[in-house]
Length: 148
Figure 1 (spheres, rainbow, N blue to C red):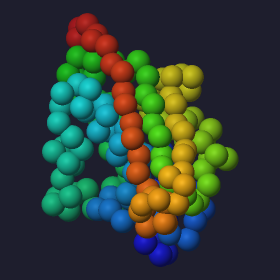
Figure 2: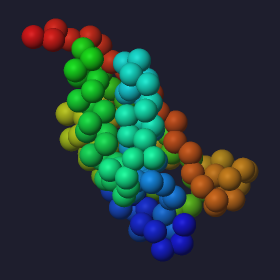
Figure 3: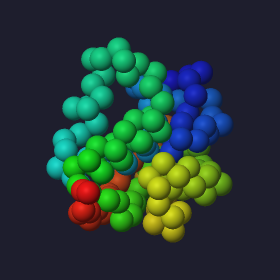
């Protein structure tokens, strides 16, 4: 969306268009939150932070990700690592990936070496290739912890 800020991984990316969404539309944080919740069998982001609730209007997605970490912890899990791939033609993200990884590692309380964020293009194909949007794929590995 023209004139809206673009956030990915809790970092503002300089670009003339941002993503549409009920929150700040940080698609990377949303995908990571979904991956964490899914790995713990806790449903998805929409079940916990519905876009029908005005409480989440313009919410900071990094804060939503923090809440996902809490939910996962209270369900008896700890995060081992995460891996995410952002698929977008423009803007180019390589220079921003280290800052994204650092910010996410802080939120997840993980060493940056256990946080993988990559950017790929779709070679001009589809909505990610023609500039109408982007996609993010993410996975999370968890292990159980002692709930004491």
